Length: 222
Image 1 (cartoon, rainbow, N blue to C red):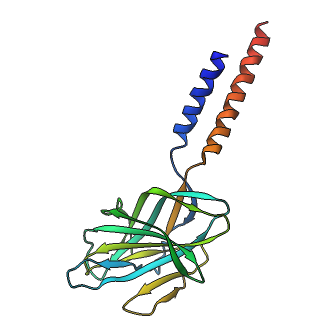
Image 2 (cartoon, one colour):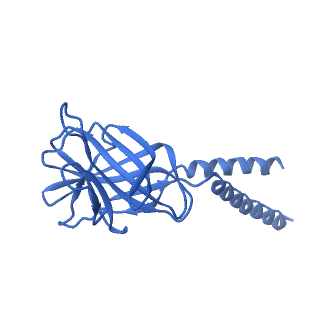
C-alpha cells in the first residue's frame, strides 16, 4: 500500500512538472510573401507627440474553454530605423461586429523578447512573446479580439505584421486615416496549459499502467 501511494505521488509530481510548458492552441503564422504588410499599432511616447494614435486588433474563436497564458506575435519598424521599445500593451476584447468591451489588459515593460526572424524586402521582421501574469479565460465558441500596441517614440512607426490562416479580417483604430476593417489577418499565436483535471487523469492513467505491470510481474514470479 505504501509503495502504491509513493508511486502515485511520484507520477503526479512528474506529470505536473512535465506539463508546465504551454502548448499552442491557436496560430496565425506570419505571411512571408514580399507583398505582406504591417499595420500601425502604437502609442507615441514623445513629449508633445501623437500619443495613442493607432491600435490594431484581430479576432479568434476557440473550440473549448481555455486558459490563455502566453501570446506571441510578429511586427516590424517602418518610417525610420528600429528604436528601443518602452512596453507592449496586450488586451482582449469582446465582440460586437468588431472590438467592443475590454475584458483583459496587461502591460509588459521592455521589448517582449524582441528577436529578429528574417528580412523580407527592405524590412526586418521581429518576433515577440510574453507570458501573462494572470490567464485570460476564453469561453468555447465565443469570438474575442486581441489588440497589441507598442509604446515607442515616433519616429519610427511599429506595425503588427500580416498573418494568414484566419478569417482574413482584422481591425484598426488610426488617427491618421480611417478607422475600420483591415482585409487581412495579423500574425499571432496563443498558448495554454492543461487544466488540473487533465494532469490528474494523466497521472491516474500512468499509475494504472504501472500497477498492471507490477501485478503481472508478481503473477510471473509465482
